[in-house]
Image (cartoon, one colour):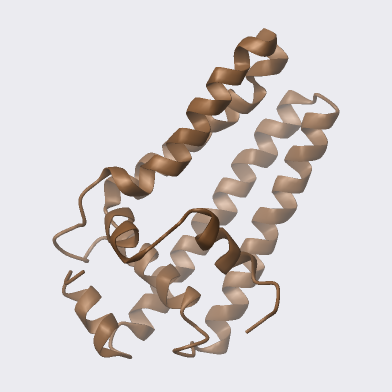
Length: 174
């Protein structure tokens, strides 16, 4: 395992446990996060529009990011793309215990690096108050994250029978 693993750090920051992951696998959680990303962007930009009154919007956006993976019940089946993306992400995060094919790891790192690069552009655009660059880079990061999710569905297709735990997840036995 890499000493600095941004993926596992993110998982710990979000306090993701077994129950939270199961609830986050609900397609409503995944798709509402995708749509909610635009509202998070608007909240982050709001201080430029309305000054300090934008701070409550930022706090609401942070609350949304924190609560969303916990808001919905665990899905009753795992046939959907969104659910399989979350299960693939879990398998990816568990790669130190259950190794994954190298090409899946490379895809995860490439798509995440792209998302990270676009987020750096977002930060630069915020610092220069360039709304259109920030908005474009934000949505480019979202597309890179969706690409990551799509690759996680491929990973899940290859890993879903690798362990008894993964087979239970496939049966929605959370």
